Length: 261
Image (cartoon, rainbow, N blue to C red):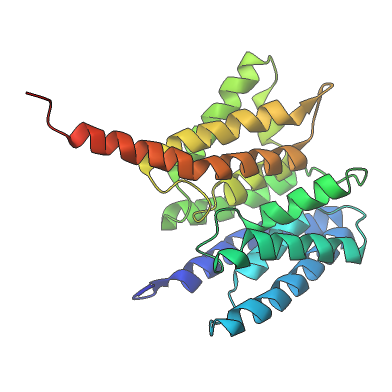
């Protein structure tokens, strides 16, 4: 779909540009492990895009770069190359390409890749990132908010969900939001314009759900595990997004019906 300069590739390049500061922050903070994760994920993504997209006579999508950045930020652990390639192949094929490519998928391919990594290789620790990484997320988040790629309703609902659930559990919301990995996931994974709710009321519900689940999944024995929590919370919230939209649309149609005489 094209309408002037606003088409699918434009949105993809905006997301790539928005994730670039956070990717640079991850490389600076986590070192070679983050860079290697990005490289292996990018190679797998481009390879599978060539297989699927050329078959469909479609161009290669730049969203592969954003996917690689996201995996590098949230999986900068001691993973072997074959593990990264296997996980990225799973995420790209089952999370994106079988639905017809980016823009038609219901789960962010980075989320599918990271979920595979975390579940298949749970013993591998991943760094969470602190305030420097969280600050690196801010410029990209502002860019996406200004351009409308990131829904402010969804982001605000997510933050409210985090703060309300943290208060109910007697945990510090600042400990959650100051983790760079958690904040990155909320902005670029939970806020993915493709895998998130398409209706305005639905964005409020899905954002609140993601925020609540992030806190519930993240705290274990007084320690908050940001990377795994944000991926799992985003995965569940994304799967519920179509159901939430269907409920909102059904309620809207029902409200339009005239009352019975």
